[in-house]
Image (cartoon, rainbow, N blue to C red; front, top):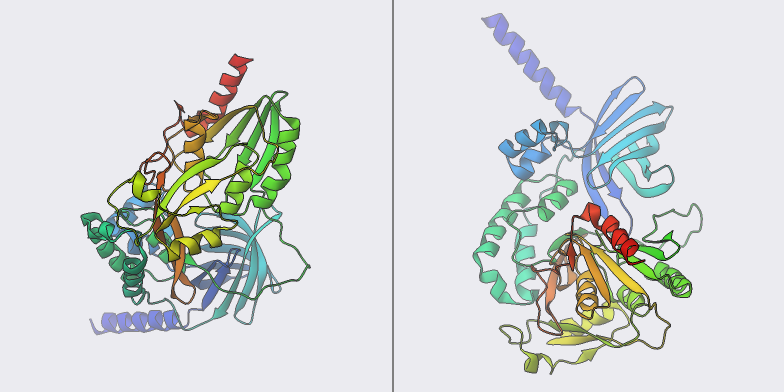
Length: 450
């Protein structure tokens, strides 16, 4: 009995010692545009093989033990609940292998590991730079996020477009779930996933968490990063053009280059694919509009918590100032400082595409896309094909919580020019079909018209 007890003590001490001496790298993952995620990578090394892995059991912390076990059984959760894994071979100080990261999936990884410091880059399709990683040996193994909760609630209460939405049972339940999540998660990856998958969702859209590290501008022209195109144009046949717009955030320059070509070619039919386009800002949306419509458009009314209103009130809303902002920042400042605005678009004489338009939508077609889809549908300028849009249309901006942690929240409600509130409603297409079949349906309709 004494021998057995002695062995157990030795095993316990050995395990504790091994855990204390486990190499942990506090690691920053930069994924472009200032987005920075911090995690803690455990290092497992055998011969020339090195595996770096983020904290295990993340799925249990996020969704509870039962859901985590079920998710693993069904293959929907990663092994051991580890969200990030770098599996690499080491030659000297150099590393080559793969990295698995939520949202991005499996990417190629190349870098270095020397003197307890990890550096490397993530690459998609051999050429597209996704981001960088830097890890330094650390005694830390997690981050305490509980202090963020009171700050998030304070910012929300002070800036939300209408405080009435915070009196709902849905919001009160969400608030409890948010506090629990912030007490459980250990790194930025878990935090980001947890915040954006909380159930129930708040009773409004555009409530998100950003992790943005302010960095000095790098004007270096060496090793320019190749990024994926956000606008793609091609001919499906002699009479049909296909225009894919992935977002209205970073696409203004590409739209200004490609849309004049579309206008010049003037195909009889134009399919505009807005599936999975989560929206963006005024700049790209107006750039798109000026090549699609030759007339002025009343987009709708944005109203803030400085205006006392219960629902759509045409007389009250028509007292709001008309806005035709040049930039999104300009428009956000207008909303922050006033009761709201009536957003207009006026074409300045730019030649427009005059052919037949088909717009493809799905449940991820959101935000800025939705007034565009609504106006083009109601004006019969386009035929909408696919799934109902996301129903995520409010005007939002971000506020500092602490350091790199920013809270995105809606500061203005939105109604179309004829009184439809799109948030949590969405736009129903003229022809409903699955996202996968939308393009084929559009091409079929075109073929039958020719």
